[in-house]
Length: 364
Image (tube, rainbow, N blue to C red; front, side, top):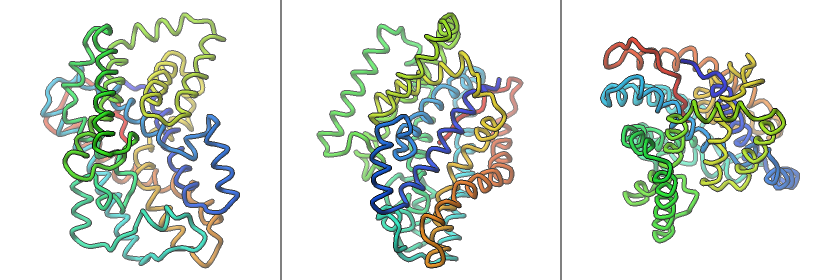
């Protein structure tokens, strides 16, 4: 089973993250002004990638629910999931480490404070490398590839996914208020612990637990939609074309506050709309983008760092940044062919063969 429209959504979201980190690198009044304007438009994911990452999480919940229903057995599912996520991730960390050693980076004049103060902002030691590969999820364990913060929660919640799938099967009269109460409780605990309500990293055991639980509803939303896929898409297909098209407006508007709860609702609506009437989402360029989306997500930050540091002093920072999207697409395609596709094939064989094909899983 291949859900082509979801491949396209995933690819678009990955490209939005690439553009976001390019924006993050730029400094100066013009960049700040344009960023401030775009924050209040549907293009907000370009300058604030949180909605794209939440979409990844909801997509994962959706397609993993379909996969686990077709392939019962937690052990096989967990082994395949770890292989599918970790092997390409480990490659991206190794790539970033090699580029770091080759370039010996220093602060770049004209680059944003984020660029000079977050990625590659540490001495590279064996202990730092191990922290990354163990996916501990703290700040110092993500500087080689800052996007990996989301993969930490992707993997953790995948390992308890059968529990989420069971909860998603509850009647909606119990599930919906339960999800709301759970989110309020977790976010209340985050606030009481002095942690942000839009968390990234979990520094210490309590923060790691609360941050992981904070994202559980994203996966649970995807599960709930997957279990009710036929009924929801049938209802959407009965709508007049104008009413169906109009639903894309609230789906995009829900992304604009960059609040995880509203982003989750908007992501769920986008997924259902995409599956009910795929339209342009089945165009070949978007399907190709979706195919390489995980690799693109993984390698674009090392590409960004290598290009800007490598060209520092030779060309202005904006010129260097302009090269990054195209080079990232090339690097993502190469990584997909050389690393991700073989890792995915091995993951499918891991734990025994299956006679039933499973949909591609979305990772972020």
